Length: 210
Image (cartoon, rainbow, N blue to C red; front, side, top):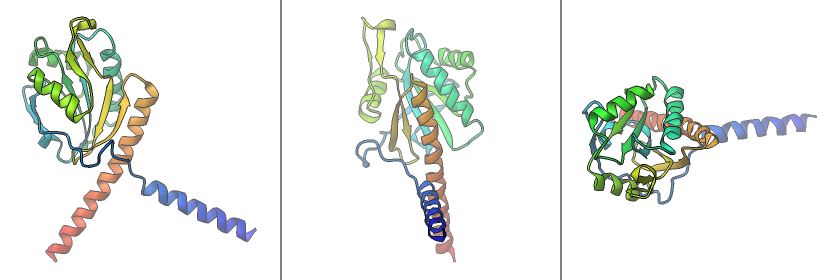
C-alpha cells in the first residue's frame, strides 16, 4: 500500500511539473521571424512590430467584403478577444488584403459592426504587395487578388500565433471551432512561458544592480 501511495505521489508531482514546464514548439524553423512591417489601423494609428514588443498576438488575413470564410473567422477571433478581454499581453492583428476598397474609414466601420475591442484588436491595411509578401514570407499564408475567386480575392483561413520575439508558435484553422479552442489553450501556455521569461529577466537585472 505504501509503495502504491509513493508511486501515485511521484506521478502526481511528475505531471504537475510537466504542466508547469510545458512549452509550445516553434512552427517550422525556430530562427524564422516575422519581418518588419508598418501599417495604419482602423483609427489611423501606425502599427508595427514594436506595437507588440511585450505581447503575444494572433494574425490573420481578410477583406471586409469577403462573402465566404471571413465572417466565420471574425466570429472566432471575437471569441478569442472575449476570452482574453482586459489582458494587456494579448493582441489580434487582422490584415486587409483589399487596399482598393478597405480604406481606414471602411476598416473602422467594419470593426464597429463586429463590436471588436480595438484596444487589443487592430484592423490594418497597406499596399497590396507589402501585405501579400508579408503573408507568404512571414506567416506562411496565402493572400492575392484573383478575379475568379468569390469577392475577387483568395486568402488563407489560418490564424498564426506569434510570440513576443516574432516567432510563430502555432498555426490554426480559423474556421474550425476545435482549432480555435486549441489556439486559446496554446495562448494560455504561451502567456505562462512569457511570464516566466519576464521574471527571469527581472531577476537577472536585479542581480546586476546589486
